[in-house]
Amino acid sequence: MDVFSDGWVGETDKEKTPTKPTMSGDGRRIDLSEARALVPALAVDGVSHSYGSRKALDDVSFTVPQGSFTALLGPNGAGKSTLFSLVTRLFNTRHGEIRILGYPLQGRPTEALRRLGVVFQARTLDLDLSIRQNLTYHAALHGMKRGDADKRIGEILAGSELAERLGEKARNLSGGQLRRIEIVRAFMHRPRLILLDEPTTGLDIRSRAEIVAEVRRLVRDEAVSVLWATHLIDEIDASDRVVVLHHGKVLAEGAVSDVTEAENAQSIREAFSRLTGLARPSEAAETETVL
Ligand SMILES: Nc1ncnc2c1ncn2[C@@H]1O[C@H](COP(=O)(O)OP(=O)(O)OP(=O)(O)O)[C@@H](O)[C@H]1O
Image (cartoon, rainbow, N blue to C red; front, side, top):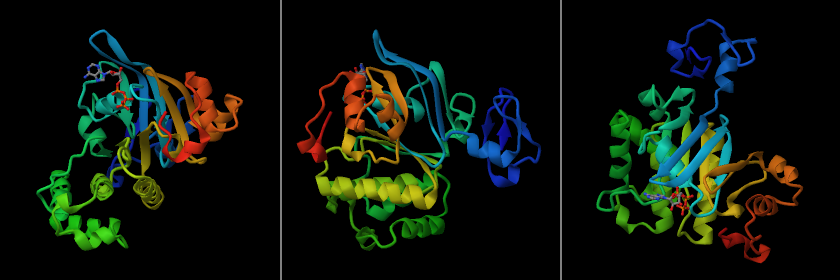
């Protein structure tokens, strides 16, 4: 674990962990295992981003606690993809700060990014390669040996029908299956934080449900933290955390029950509607509701 001069703590490999205690934000002495648990998987602090004169993110701050499934809920144009471009360092963060497991993206990009897995909105598999090649090439980029990569593929796909199809070209797969392979790929190098940008876009209801269930299973089994960008309220579970983003601003952050209660609403759907002023989508169309 690294202890930074400003009091932040970044986790590192166990063997590098020093044994000295550190300080919490309020000056209390805490031991290192406690400090490690307190470090958010993702901390976004005062981040703004503009495209020319259009402000896409305006002083955005929120955290993804370790081990949480946090939904970044916002309608089209809210700023979700812009935020992902900053966290993945496609864009430079000029205003504010982003930390992954305590590591600042600006100052310690290698330490920060090696703990990150990403599923982008656009499809990124090479359709002319086999499924296995797509996965092993990605693993090699992260320094994994071939044998370890094969073992990892077996681990993640245990019990899945996709495990029988690893030698097939990716183009033989359905849209939902391609997405599932992209998710497997994001988990290959055992990241601690996974970002998924509207991963169920364009999929049918069954594929959507399978993907949400699969990611939740991986979160539980591998104790990773997830930031799941979506504009689909029905993808949010009562046990999730939620960050409501609208017109580039964070309108609410917290456990689904807390955000619902704070808005004096009956459901997160109603709370979202109150927060954003957007019409409440029909309950009848719940499974396909697009905000
Ligand atoms: N390259 C760009 N140039 C100019 N404006 C942009 C660019 N990319 C995004 N924007 C604008 O920034 C704002 C936020 O867009 P962004 O794509 O981050 O939102 P989003 O929540 O991901 O929406 P969607 O779900 O539609 O992808 C929008 O007003 C959008 O029009």
